[in-house]
Image (cartoon, rainbow, N blue to C red; front, side, top):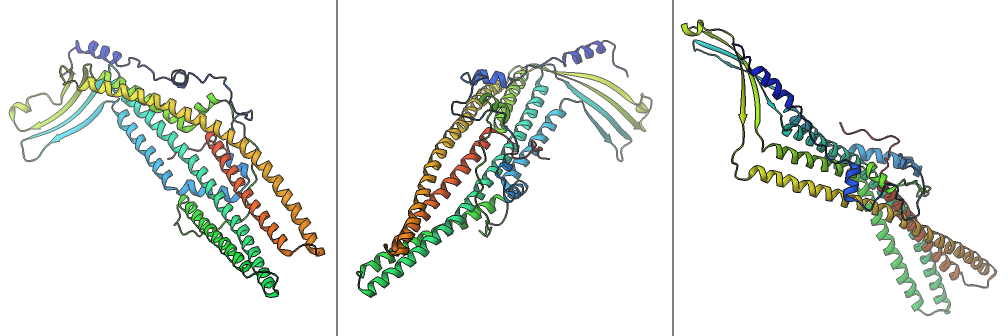
Length: 460
């Protein structure tokens, strides 16, 4: 049985209508104009910044081979990153599901057994996507997939940045423990001198007690720093996917602070940071889902075709034509749904507004991160200059005190006290150096460059 000739032009017309173009979601430029009117394309950073294009491979700027190895281990084993990769797989599967609805569905069905009749049927059906309902859903799934990919890339950067901070913390605590041990040793010597002075009768017994109290305080501070070092090791081990035994040892000094990196322009940040790209893709997904909901209120038209082979011992079927062919069409127009379809349109309209506002809010937060980091860098730089000057002055005073003790004009206690003051200043310097390194990590992360020389591949 062949289809009637009148159905052919109709089918062609419907197929042509199925290719109607859809509206496109707002691009980054349109979103910026809508949500970030205060951010023109040529606006420069308000805080003093380094001109130039933001570069990748920012982790290599610290020239720390151990840190590079730890970052690679974290990327390979971190559980939060594995979760982000699993979300990419989920959205990729959803994209395949939604995209499959764009194509005809083909199936085969058979009927057999002890009956006198055996039937085998091959059928195909296809919804003519006249109004773009299916295409909008497919495009929304593609945008969600792109958003999850960008989320994964951003998660990589965050994991690497967090690993770097944890490594700097471990190095800092190891060096602080060394300085605190020096303070304990100096206090022990002061206690010994106090006992000698009491024995010779030139000092009261309370001097020993005062030095004993100071020694216990120094020893308590040492134990606290040793605990902090162990906890920092546990934090880093968790990031690396290891058992948190607190046994990871740190060797070497804190790396030197790299030169200030180029920052580009604020508007360029929107196109570079993966988390902002993900937010933009979610706006596009919400836009397409709204289009799909609007199209769902319109009629759905599907065409189908089937070929059926029949084998039967019954006289009437044996005399019939086999195989049996057929072409059909179906039409479904919603008349009353209790407001459900309009509710879906309103829902996705609200979702689109939310994602657009969230994009603007997230972009402003990203801009603040960069401006705040640049401001903090300047403040830390000024403080480092003052601290270096103070350290140099204390070193000079210590050398003079050592000379006075050597010629016998001063008590050895003055040298020990100067040594303690110098050690405490060095500890401040270590803490400031760590804070500056962490602030630099914050700036590099906020700028949106990659920790690798080239853009990292998307999770497979």
